[in-house]
Amino acid sequence: MGTIDWANLSFGYLKTDFNVRSYFKDGKWSTPTESSSETIELHMAATCLHYGQEAFEGLKAFRGKDGKIRIFRMRENSLRMQSSCRGIMMQELPNEVFEESVLKAVKLNEKFVPPYESGAALYIRPLLIGISPQVGVKPSSEYLFVVFVTPVGPYFKEGFKPTPLVIFRSFDRAAPLGTGTYKIGGNYAASLTAGHKAHEMGYSAVLYLDPKEKKYIDEGGPANFFAIKNNTYITPESTSILPSITNNSLMQLAEDLGMKVERRPIPEDELGSFEEAGICGTAAVISPVERIDDLEENKSYSFVKNGQAGPVSTLLYNKLRAIQYGDEPDTHNWVTILE
Image 1 (tube, helix red, strand yellow):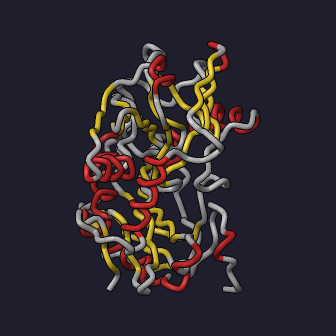
Image 2 (cartoon, rainbow, N blue to C red):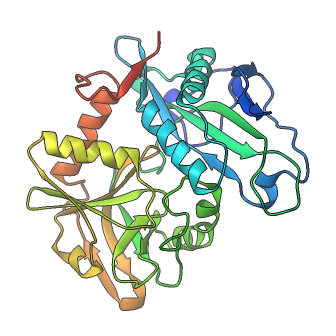
């Protein structure tokens, strides 16, 4: 496999030895089996290619100081994939198949789990696609579930350093009663143009406003938004936001630390009153926000002093990572230790 520079990994694909696959056919799922092929043979009329029947997840495995490998919130990812299946009429994947496949994929590629000191992790990508050939717009009758893994560094190259976000009113990520709450490829395709424009202008991500009134904060392109004010953790409530497992974990940790937690609509006007802001997700954990520019309204909101992340974001970030790496007790049973 050559020598991997663990400390300088980007968030990209690096070939590992095996992936794990299960097929749904004739009303049942096959036993998850390993494959060393990086390709999938697909019929040209498969529903995933024409009608977007595709759902995926993202979770991570971490190597602790004790050498043990911990997978973070596997069951929550499985439940969210089931929700995505219901959202776009795909065959629901049983928790047992999801979890057996994830454990098998991590075990088979154990040597690719980065060492504790590196601060890197093994990214796990479960993917579910409709594969039966048809040209009528209806759900597939057959499905393929694949889990592959790859070692990754931070999602944003800056790591845990504040970066700027931009608000574009001319783009929506998802419709109010559309598929925004599901982790499916179409939502990400819808965010590519705005994301590319933001990157070209020097921003790390887009912060979307609600698609109906363009008045409330929705979410960042790749992650949920949160803010801190008066010892309160505040995150948007909306019918078009993906429920982030990281955000749910941070809300719980904020409560554990004696903070108040509010999930509610956040008007853009309120941004100016926040002490700290961040976007959060599996890939980034927390990416602190330096400032948010609303160019069309000629407004800018700043959240950072001395170029450093705020104290609450830092505390939450360190606490979550300590649980993931096994440095702090897992009091909420979030972690699965690989046997």
